[in-house]
Amino acid sequence: LTSFWARQIILSFFVLDDISMKAIFLLFHALIFSRVKFSTHAFVANHQRLTRFYSTRARYSLPNSTGKRINDYYAKRVESPKRYDLSESSLKLSPVDLSPLSSSSETISALLSNESIKGAFSVATFLPQPFWALLILIPNSGVTKKIMGGYEVLFALSLVHFFIVAASVGQPEGTAPLEQFNLVFDPTGDPQGSMMSMMTYSNFVSEEWSHVLTWDLFVGRWIWLDGLRRGIFTPHSVLLCNLIGPPGLLLHFATCAVTGKDVFVNDTPVEEFTDE
Image (cartoon, rainbow, N blue to C red; front, side):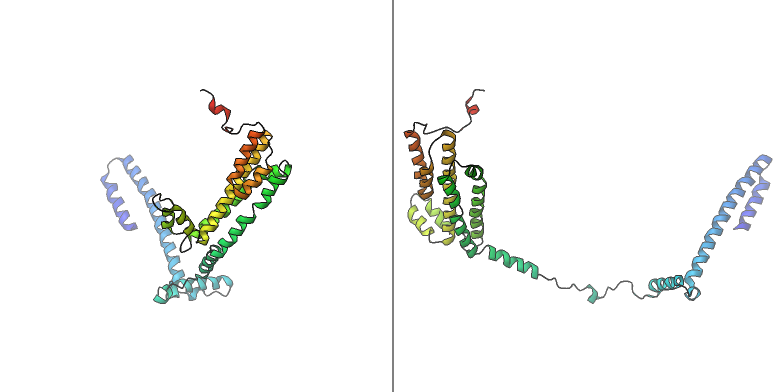
């Protein structure tokens, strides 16, 4: 490379006539030659060092820990016949343990079983009774107002009813066959007889019972609130509402009429009737 470059410079030097152009030409090629020579020597030196390092392992069998680490690394990278085991046995998938999923499925099945629905039936029956006692026995107490003033109790009873319905969906016959529901609302048939046949299904009985008890308490609470707002005696009406439902509401209306209160009060806010 050096001799070739020298011949090219000499030939070009004699071709140029102007002395200034010769000087610039020589300076330019001297700079390029020095850079190329430096880069070439650096590349060659680095290549020779790498060649010496990887050519043989014996040259670097040093007694100290550094030499051992170099030899171990070289042995793993160069002498290992396989870096990756791609044999059929290594690629075979190991079986997945599905026992946690099966146990969870069994737990859910037990939770949504007929026994759980039966337990929810008992909860829906007995849970509302202490709250009825508050409305009937101590309607003006601060404890009653604090507990029954909100919707927390009704929300809990609604959840019990929802659980019964949701658990019944997973049963073979649900709450009752769909055909029976259709017959109840068939005016040309026997709706009462269809309803009686539906009562032979335990899940339907549980659903209807919790349904009725939740709405009875909802109406009884409304009677109690109306009595507080307008100063009307309500324990007897609330008690009858607990026992047989709608007649308790009728008794409250009768009490309003006897005491000179408006019977049918419009609970819509007053601003709804104002002209825009």
